[in-house]
Amino acid sequence: MTRTLVIAAAQMGPIARDEPRSSAVARMIALMGEAAARGAHLVVFPELALTTFFPRWFMDNQAEIDAYFETHMPSEATQPLFDAARRLGVGFSFGYAEKLMDAEGRTRRFNTSILVGPDGAVLSKYRKIHLPGHWDEEPWRAFQHLEKRYFERGDLGFPVADALGGRVGLCICNDRRWPETFRMLALQRAELVLLGYNTPQHYPPAPEHDHLQDFHNHLVMQAGAYQNGTWVVGVAKAGREEGCDLIGGSCIIAPTGEIVAQCAGLGDELAIAECDLDRCREIQDNIFNFPAHRQPGEYGLLTEITPDS
Ligand code: CDT
Image 1: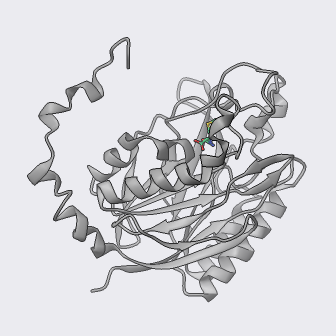
Image 2: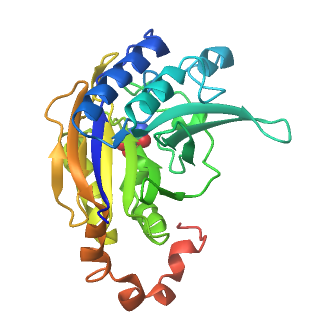
Image 3: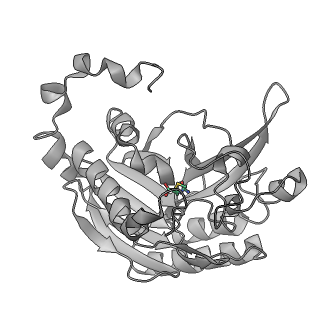
C-alpha cells in the first residue's frame, strides 16, 4: 500500500490589522480549493493564520489583546474552513492564538497549531514552546516581538499523532531553529513535521543578519528534515504586513534534506509535492538509524538545568 500524501504548503500574504477573520478564512478556503483541485490530501497554513502578527505591537489593554485570540475552535468565523475541508475531502493544519479557562479557573493564552482531518475532527494540537522576543515594550526597535508577553509556554509537549496514514508532528515558527524540536518529534517516530512561521526580514537585535533570514529559514528546516529523516513542510505568512517585511520561502523538504517544492512569491500561493512517507526509511534505517547509532548516554547535558542552560 502506498503511503504517498500530496501536500500543499499554503503560504499566505500579509493580513492587515483591521482585516476580519472572515477575509482570512475566505483566502484560506480559496487556497484549499485550489490545492484540492490539484490533488492535495493535506493543506498546511501559517502560524497565527487568522489575524495579523499582533505581537509586533505593544498593547496593555487586555481586551484589545484578546480580540486577536480564539476562545473556541471551530468558531462561527472558522467553521466555514472546517466545512470546506469536509466538502473537499482534505486535511489541514493552521495556527491561531488560543485563549481558554483551565480547570482551576485561570485564563491561559497560547500560540497554538492544530491538525484537522478531512472529516473535520481535530487530530492533534500543539502549543508553541520556544516563544521568541521579549516581555516589555522596547521602543528602540522598529517593531516589537512580544510573544513572551502575550503567550505562555506551551503545555502539551511536542505531539506526534497517527494521522492521514502516517506519523505527524507539529511545531511552530521559532521551534524550527532548535534541533531539540525535531529530535523530540523524531524520537516519537514522526514522518512528517508541519510548521507555520511569521519571520520578519529585519531582526532588531542583530540587523547584520537581516540578509541571512531566508538562508537560516531553509538551513534549519533542511537540517531538521535530514538529521531526523522526516518530511518537513514549512509555511510562511509573507510579504509587507503593516509596514513589516516577512520572509516567504514556504517549502516542502524531503527526508534527504532536499527542497522539493517552494513558493516563489510573497503572497497567497501554493507549493505542492507528492510526499512518500516510506522515504523516511532512506535516512532512518541508515545514516540516522537511532537504535544503531545514537548515544543518548552521552547527551545528559541536554536535559540538565544548569546556570548556563
Ligand atoms: N514567529 C516567530 O517565532 N518568529 C521568529 C522571529 C525571530 S525572533 C524575534 C522566528 O524565529 O522566525
